[in-house]
Length: 392
Image (cartoon, rainbow, N blue to C red; front, side, top):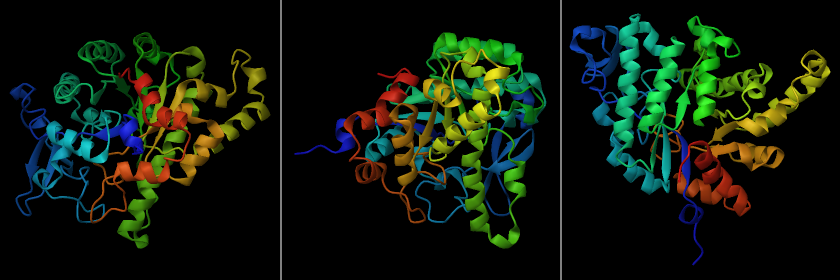
């Protein structure tokens, strides 16, 4: 009998999320901070649960956990108890992974933000640092349920470089496999990625072999949401905003190349997370053209590679729902720089349900990727991620 792809390849899902439990921070941070500690509270009028940061309402607690939900986003489950337990329970997550044909998953947060920027709203440096450390400790414990299949990516207190470097070393020793970082620190009042302020962080990550992971939505989202015209309709605006967030990561990829980060740190790898890959061939061709057409080689003769060559050496991007555009990227760029993901349990995830067009990942892979060369399949579904995140 011929084996399916997921039967013969241990698929590594390179982007999923944990829906943080309500007691994550209240159980790990000194009670003296009171209501400033991130916590969940139900609205007394409708029973819907919300996260509170610094005593102020932030976001719907179950908003990111849409897997299997019966309504289209931006509608969402009213309470955490109404969500797929695989979004917050590691034992249930492993069951869902088996159902989806996935060997391992890389885990990202929700509440603290996709670059940890939400913690800045607390405005108390000690509490901010405690929150980051508490999240990382929680994730260490959560992934310890099966450390060969659940892969933790650390959050950082990026507003304090010394503290960030210390946290990298601490979490590395605890088994974390990569670093979550904002693609636009300037949005939060800090220098841009190319600024020398960040050099100790890049040096530490390179020395430890840890990836820098730019998740979509980690920078300035004001333009994305400001561009929504109410007359378009709620669902239409949500669809547009989501796609614009995908494309926004092209700026992060451009910045690490043009700024010389790849040149200065040739062993440091960067991952564009939850961004898709169809835009990559155009971006690289455009960057190469403008690099030459604008005389960058004359201005910066020490840059010995073209943008596309720096990308192929050090940068990766993830895809999940794409069919034709992903295959085009594989044809034009090759398989060495792309990773497969599901985005579970987010609204765009490959999570079948009554209000989702998603296929079960095992079916999606078989129907849309199985005719690719075996070497390509193994690189995209397993080998690239295994190398980046130091997995067996």
